[in-house]
Image (cartoon, rainbow, N blue to C red; front, top):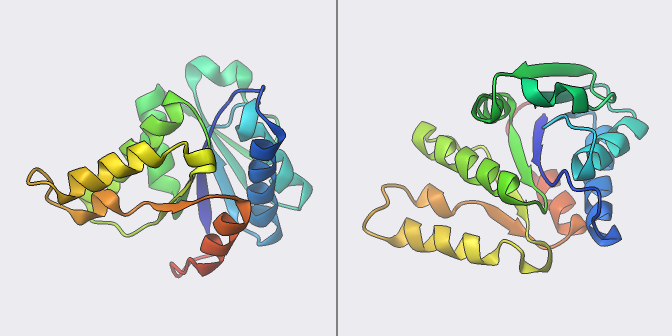
Length: 182
C-alpha cells in the first residue's frame, strides 16, 4: 500500500507532534508499505521518513519540486522531480492509495483540500485520514461538512475525510484500511 503523507516541513515542532510522525513512519516500515511524501529533508517529512527507514521500509518516495531539489531527503529510495508545487500535488495524488494529513501549515492544508477535490471529481473512495492534533483542523473539517450539506455541493464525499486525534487512532484506522493492494 502506498501511503501519501502531507505534513509540516518546520523543524521547530513539539515532541508530541514529532511522536505522531514517528509512529506513522514506523507503522509504514513495519508493515512493508511505501511512504510517499514531499521528499524534503526537514520537519515531519524527514521525521516520518527516518522512522520508516529505521524500521526497514524499502520504498521511500520523495516528490520534490525542482526548485527544492537541493533540500531533497537523502533517505528517499526514489526521488521524483516535479515542475512545481501543482505538479507535485498531482503526482502525490496519482501515487497514493491512502492519504494521511499530519499537522502542518498552509501547504499541508492545500495538499489535503486539493487531494479531496481530485478524489471527489474522480469519485474515488481512497481514504484521507487527518490527524486533528489539538483540534487543529476542526474548523476546516466543519467547513467541509457545511459545504457537503449545502446546495452548492454535488458530492457528500467532500465531508468524507476521517479525523483522528492521535497516533494510536491513526494506526487503528490504517489497520482497518482494505483497498486490495500491498
